[in-house]
Length: 309
Image (cartoon, rainbow, N blue to C red; front, side):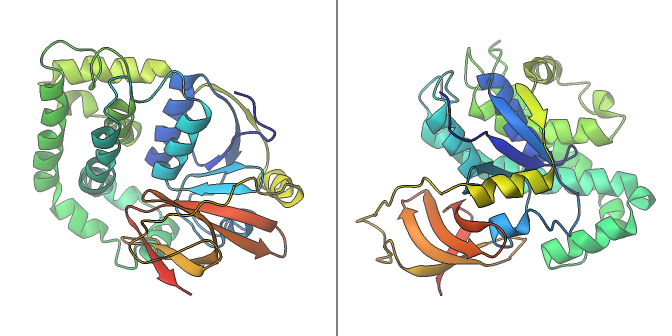
């Protein structure tokens, strides 16, 4: 499917959540535009587009801005339905695995990686992540917890290994899909930062072979532009999101209502705007910014709070 505007991903190379999206570009052979952003704040060309949302990655299509991998993945599947991320038609449970991989599994891998890196972690990165978390980024505590984190990592990997035990190549069966994308993120993250992943996976032969297949997927076809060029694209574009009501919204929200959307775990920056579209899984709000102009910012519902403004 062709689009009027390029698929732009605002990301940094070390981001495991960005790797999720990059792998989907590979699975679907999508042509996309890379915008490399700083690992830490400030991000002066991105904030006008997101309204302050500062987690990574962010996908931009013209003046429509997609925050969080849940939302990005859903939109990519809608625009590029083949090959599907749900080859066995298990859309619900495959999507729900993100609550495992993005939260408990990811928190385990973060603590393991930074505990083992310890004094190699830059102070400006620690300060930035403390602002993001709203809590101390305690590398010393992570180092002390390494034995427990090794135990937890092994337990998570065992689930992957058990899923592959019948000889299947992919977690969902005979074709790669969202199960694989979600689970791979954390294996990739450890591989990218620690030299001893092969030792940690020594007992998990099926997982090692699966990781090799995932690495071979690649990242699709990309070109690169600057952060300022991406902001200019957004400023020149008009949002294309159609108004959509949700007659079953449990709080009676509707298009036109002014709300604030905020993550429920970390990076709790409120983004304010007027509802354009909403459903059980998605909310889109219209914003106006002096530099970006009119944009519509999209969020998932799971893992986010919607507050009356």
